[in-house]
Length: 262
Ligand SMILES: *Cc1c(COP(=O)(O)O)cnc(C)c1O
Image (cartoon, rainbow, N blue to C red):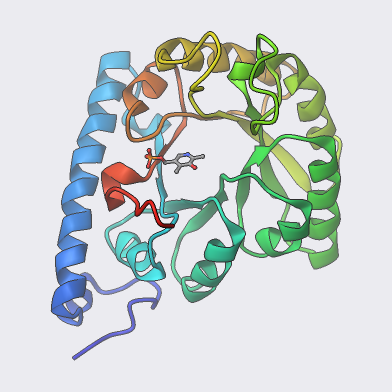
């Protein structure tokens, strides 16, 4: 017997009974990995004196098949992230009935914006004024609910290094945040960063995430509702939680090491 793994709100025993042996093995593997990540987040929250509910696990499913997203949803994952529209759009369509919030975390070209706003609930990688205008136009055209936007901060641009990498320099965050807040169809949700590989914070994610927390405080002073702090991946989620992250983006630790071919 096989079942429809993309059906909404699966009945758990019936769901697992209807999986193929390969699907069941993957379901159990993902469940074990999720338990390990959940324990890491809970321990990091306890160490920081923060309630566990302050941190949302966003599972980064990029390069993995839609089937994994469905198994994750059945395991109780509520938030998934993708970084390439070409992969994300067909997955989101297959998973449309599942209770998943979709985060877009990759560099976003304006020619992909219409597609991304058709499935993404939040875009973490807003890094230029032209992208803000383009997102707004697409949201207004489709008549969808306002799109949550995070300003991606490039902490390696602090010293003028890292030109060309995704994200805006710290001294430009407030300006771009203000533009998002003033633009119809968009909601300023917060800030995001990836621990930099170059510049003064290279190899020091704890300091990088402390700097992001300072930037978040400045943004919230002007925009109190922009509370999201998206930081931390498989290798540095503890440092991110310690620095106040509200959303950690974890791929490898849940799904496994990605194929270098993709
Ligand atoms: C891939 C990716 C992640 C997850 O990284 P892992 O090291 O696999 O946990 C997080 N954030 C962004 C922006 C990514 O592209």
